Image: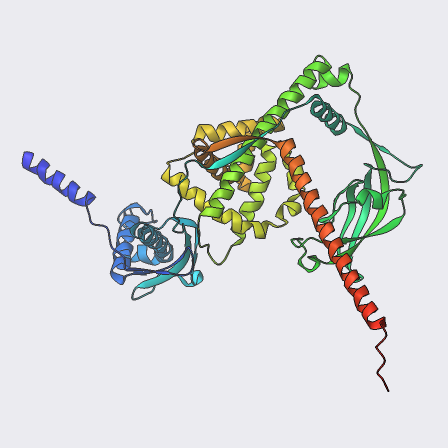
Length: 503
């Protein structure tokens, strides 16, 4: 009896310790942070796996006229041949792919791109060979991270700031009143048809565009004096504004070009801010105006604290970008560009901007995203490396806590927001962003932090800028005076009479 038990245990151990099949694998460089992997699945491995799968299927298949497990093997193979082959192909590719990654210690970023994926079928005879390219974590040498010099902005919330926040709140809760007896004034809300023309040809248009009469963007182009250009305009009137499109404009033919923006005004409305009365205060959950002002101050302090932390993180990011050498993949896919857009959207969400408003400004978020993708991808690789080396991670409770905070800002249930974020891909991006922030915050713990007065720094910069401008102007003036003086000397020299020669 003991001998039988020993034999059974031995058989069981042998089954568990069955050696892993070693696939012929060849890895070669395909450019910076990119590997080309060639894998062969030998015919013996294919035959063995097919036999094993058909055997398992025969034991489970229910075929009319036969008891389960007693159908003829030939019938099983005939009826389920293609399904079994497809399943075996997927299992063998997954198994060999995993082995190639683990055996060569590849830190894969993103999904593999297979060569001729449509023709990857199990052959009737012989082996199956396939290849793919994959982006991997590049080799990065991380410099010393202790003692990085960082400036921490000192920003105080004043009574004026709080009153401005109150004004903003009143405007947000205000009412748009139609205007018919006058032309456009500053800060009016307008509706009109916008046509962008290049060399007389319409290259972009937006009907019933929402426009605010103040300096800002229109048709993706910054117009610093938009309020002045629109002032006095009346419904039914059409005006044309000349402007220069930015070099990163979404419409490539417009980049850096001077265009005509034609605006056909349809409607003018004026914003009337809501009155601060008891009804308004109670609708927001406050008993009096002081409570509301205190809440606005607290909200501003929290937002400033977040902005200050972000400013310090950005300084660490800049230090890393300036001091880490990294070769990026040649091809930056749409996935990286989309990551930039999602990161920008996530930053806006953290600032309390509604998801609907963010969704309505996707084109603006995409502006320059392709250029920014290079910087973002480089930073992504660096911070992933640091997070791995320092064992930084984000657990489920931290992720749920951040989602709960975002949900509270929007007045929705955390579960609903989490589901929406999982669908549109922002949940995975939130995890990555939180992990990167934790890695940067860990670096900040050992940084040399200097508190700086933002207002004083700004005034200093403006003074230096004016000084440089003044010196430049003086230099030009001196150069101009010298040129004029030299010109006068030349003219006088030409006018001086030549001495007469004796006859």
